Amino acid sequence: MSVANHHFASPPRPSAGASRHLHQSPAHLAALLDQSTSISQTLQLHAHILRHNHHHNPVLTLKLLRSYSSLGLLSHSLTLFNHTHDPNVFLWTSILDAHSARGHCAEAFGLYVRMLAQGVEPNAFTFSSLLKCCCLGSVDSVHSQVLKSGLGSDSYVTTGLLDVYAKIGDVESARKVFDKMPERSLVSLTAMISCYAKSGSLDEAKSMFDEMGDSKDVVCWNVMVDGFAQHGRPYHALELFREMLEEGVRADEVTVVSVLTACGQVGALETGRWIHSYVESNMILFNVRVGTALVDMYSKCGSLEDARAVFDKIVKKDVVAWNSMISGYAMHGCSQEAFSLFSRMRRMGVRPSDITFIGILTACSHAGLVDEGWRYFNSMTAEFEIEPKIQHYGCMVSLLGRAGRVKEAFDLVKNMTLEPDPVIWGALLEACLLHKNVRLGEEIAQLLIDRNSAHSGTYALLSNLYAAAGEWDGVARVRAKMKDSGIQKEPGCSSIEVNNRVHEFLAGDRRHPRSKAIYIMLEEISKWVKSSGHRPVIESVLHQMDDLEKERSLEVHSEKLALAFGLIGTPAGTPIRIVKNLRVCADCHDVMKLASKMTERKIVMRDRNRFHHFVNGCCSCGDYW
Image (cartoon, rainbow, N blue to C red; front, top):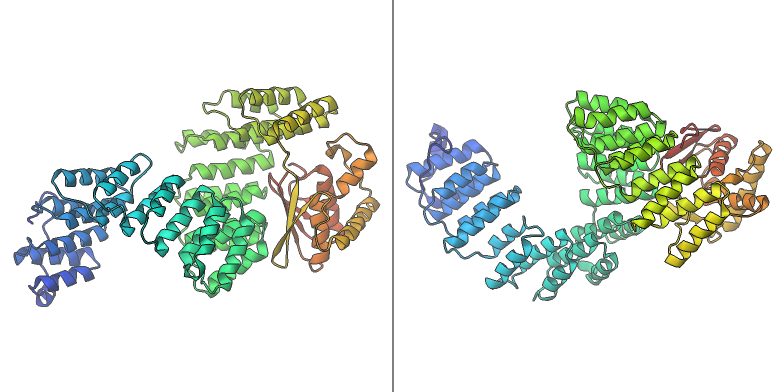
């Protein structure tokens, strides 16, 4: 096991102190290598091994190779390996694992090919290491090698195969592996549940999860909670988290991040605050990942003050943390704060990413800052060598469209080097609706229909565009086409958190247990706003009916029901926070402004586009949304 000097420096002579303590016994040297935690220690031990002629000992070679790898000295490990005569399967596996663990997949597969060429048979640990860096194109060939080697039933290997199939979303192959396992451990069950959850097959994942009974550990709970949070079922994620705590399972960092994501999706601020206190009281490490999740949650739940307080406490902020706070300011319409933070981020030496510019361009869009938007957009390539993605073009289309420059937005889309996606076309259609440009809206919608790219949102926007222009024949045609195609319009839905529970309302909803009290309060709100001179914005009702029917329709919009419940369900003077899945209509926007003044309450509403902070009769958006 001689080491060539041109690959790395010869190990130094051990110090006098080290010489006194080093024993020539290979077993003792092996124990010292296991305990080594620094490069200097390992180099001194290597020198001693060479000096006392132990360099042919396979155990010491393996320990030394692992020590170098664990210290990040992969080149030392590889040089040591290459100068080892006739390495056994354990050495091959160790060097392969060292490359795989660091993401050097091509090198790991190259080592595997060399190993087979030299006639060394892989073992279960070899395949486990190799599977860590498998992808869609390589997993089938490795699986075949596993079967040929007779290790197709080894739990260690099959669990690795399950992980790979889960990573690439191949549920069918994962299930075949799982069904052939002679014994199913907690790890393999969790891997199969993870595969279902990552692919969005949440009902199958939950069924298997429930069958595990009391054997579930925190990792298994995390997989299920995160699956619900990542696939648009935040209420299920929060409910499962409560069950987890009731079962006596202690949450960890992974749990906290997943649950905070769910809180942000539904605007559950009080639940998010409770989780924040849980982090502090249960000594969960407040690192950049947890801190960023808290910033994101507070921003999406309407509390920028809390978001900024957490952001300032993050010690080693990475670009993701900066992006989260910039995006928070952007979605609340605080454009100058977003720009200021971007400048500070650059002064701190943090290089912006493509996500950073989505936040900055969103800030420009919500404030109508067209010139600034173009400046930031052009700086991406000119100054930061970041190629704009479809999301950046979407921000620019939204910015130009809101500002009334619909033709300019359309020209930008037509001249894009990327293929426009439904989000971009949707932003253009929204601009056409906002500025009642029926002819361009028709052109865009027809283009989408011809390309088979139209969805429910496309038809709904086109229908609303015709309705806003009073072209009811056009509305009838679109709705007939939607009916024939089985397309349903997304219903408006608003939610509000009261006493740590999120309550949802649809327009005209009477399902709530306190429905009678809600409608009594709704009548009170109607009297308040009418006494202040409010005239219903019946143009917001995009249905062919008389004016009185339109007024009645406006009175029971979902956000007004949520407001009424907030007024009867929370203490006087406390803020009311509402989440709406669609863009808030002009009438509800006016009512929220008046209600904030009459009740002396701050009303925070998050709609599909942005946040609105209603205080003393005014909105933070300046009526630009």
